[in-house]
Length: 238
Ligand SMILES: NC(=O)c1ccc[n+]([C@@H]2O[C@H](COP(=O)([O-])OP(=O)(O)OC[C@H]3O[C@@H](n4cnc5c(N)ncnc54)[C@H](O)[C@@H]3O)[C@@H](O)[C@H]2O)c1
Image (cartoon, rainbow, N blue to C red):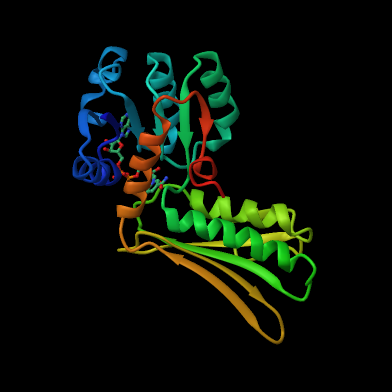
C-alpha cells in the first residue's frame, strides 16, 4: 500500500517505521517545511493519507485529501467540533474518512470497559466519579481527545453527570477532568469512582507511541476501498 504522511513529527515518523516494517511504502511526507508539495496530484499517488498534525490545521488537511479523492485517516486531536462539517464534505466527495482520538487497541478496550463501568455505576449514587490524564508538555490540547471520549462515555451512561469540566472544582452534576503535563509521558488516563467505604480505579498507560502508530496503519489498510466515515468501533466491532 502507498501511504502519504500528512505531518511528519513524532507520530508521522512512528507511523513510517511501522508502515515500512509491514511492507508499505511512504510516497509523500508533508510537514510545515514543504506545504507546497501538499497537492492533489501528489496525494493521488498514494492509496491512503494518514494525517497527524496540529488541531488548527487538521480540518483543512482532511478537506484537501477528500477533494483529491484520497482516503484519509485522521489522528490529530482537538478538531472534532468540525466533525459534522467533515462528514458532509466526505459525503459530497463520496470519499473515505477515518477518525479517532486514539488509535491504540488497548485504549479502545479501555473505552468499552469505561462505558460498562459507568453503566453499572448509574444505580449507585454513593460513588463520586472523576478523571485525570497525564501527557508530555508539548501536547497542545487539554483535556486530551482520549479523555474527552472517556468523559463522553461516562456522561452517556451516568444520569447524575451532565457535562465535563477541565478543573478539580466541579459542581455535583459536573465530571471533573484534571490534566497534568509532565515529561516524559506518552499518555495515562484514569477514571476513579470513590465512596465513603471504597474506591474503584481504572487506568490505561501507554508505554510508547507504537500502539497509536500501528492502529493508524491498521485503520489505513482497512479504509482503502471503502466509502463513508468510520472510527475505531467500526474497525474493532465494539
Ligand atoms: N489519535 C491518536 O492515536 C494520537 C496519538 C498521538 C498523538 N495524536 C495527535 O496527533 C497530533 C500530532 O502529534 P505529534 O506528537 O506527531 O506532533 P508533532 O508536533 O511531533 O508533529 C506535528 C507535525 O505536523 C506538522 N504540521 C504542522 N502544521 C502542518 C500543516 N499545516 N500541514 C502539514 N503538516 C503540518 C509539523 O511540521 C510536524 O511535523 C496531535 O494532535 C496529537 O494530539 C493522536
